[in-house]
Image (cartoon, rainbow, N blue to C red; front, side, top):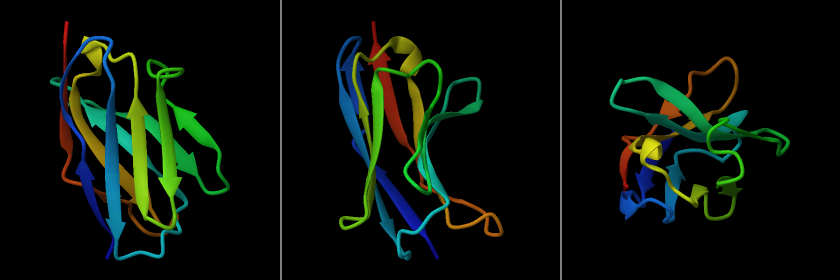
Length: 117
């Protein structure tokens, strides 16, 4: 069973940077999609960034140009570099990975990111 463990969250001032990392275990790291979502105080979970099998990357509109998602199949990690952070980036960030369309995706436990103005 795929297990995802996030790390790297914390508190930062607006304009600062953070790097999140998701350690993947229980998998050969072959996913149809993997990436990051976030949940804000309104409990809405939205896509932050994802990597589709083949390498294409998708970003949520508000993070384009500021965040970069990457994956390392040797280290088995999914990383999210976040620059120029804004207060509205505050939330719980979840790692997600899905092996195939016939298998539900797995979620990490989440890591808190707080950006102060």
